[in-house]
Image (cartoon, rainbow, N blue to C red; front, side):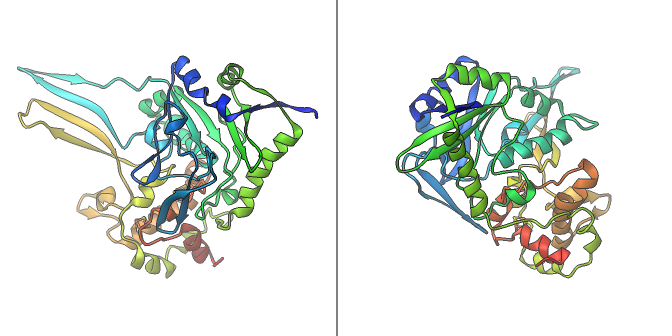
Length: 371
Ligand code: SF4
Ligand code: SF4
């Protein structure tokens, strides 16, 4: 059968050599691993670190791990963390000021330069990286720490075959198959008789990695099987976000639904902490007990905290209604005016990790009249 240019087949045992190859190329590898009952992003040195044969059950306010397809490397959807935790960590030192007798010494920490391979991130998270790039790397005020981390990050994206109940990436056009922006794309094909991976390099680094792996050109049937995997994922996804929300949520600022959702919302900020596109931060200064050293750190902040909108005299958004409205309206509506795209990539994390199970697709539909 004819082979498909740019597509290659690798067996599981051959793909397990990838981690050694990345190490030889000078990358530390971060990827999916199980910790504390969830699939999180951690250091990966071999396939034994991956959640092989494990799947996740997700729903509004619910996340559980259980046994999945035996031997499957990627039989799960997204966990609570995304590339954001690597590119803009929750806490980053910005400055240390040391007292040196009559003078002060100002020390800025070096920007991240360690080469890192993000292995197994999902297409929605790749899309979220592009959203954050626009804000933090290509905006009028680039964040040099983010840029340094981004420039040294290699992306191995894994197309999705097993979406969660909370996913809705087809309606945001961010998955379940990645189209661009990766160094290497991987689709796992696993059934009763076959288990292999279809690889597509997206950069010179990706080509080099494939060349170092044992591989062969993929034939049309193998590529079709890979495409069928992501098409099955599309069929399995039932949630969707209403189209063209730009201007529509803001126009409904007085809708009674904001009161209804505020009655359920705890203002805990979980939705913003797990969202791969959120970028709000605060700056905190502390001194050591001796008073010799002052440290300035940047920490993730949330539009659900009272302090986030604090101006002279108090908070602009003093109640949960206004804070939830700010979150949803910015994410789905005014983000378009600011950045020319939506702030949502359909990963569903804010639904899964919301304690009362508030679903932004339901809220948005209700507010713009679709549900
Ligand atoms: S708003 Fe929710 S579904 Fe959309 S990207 Fe953020 S966490 Fe994911
Ligand atoms: S919507 Fe849910 S996760 Fe977000 S602040 Fe309210 S209760 Fe917390």
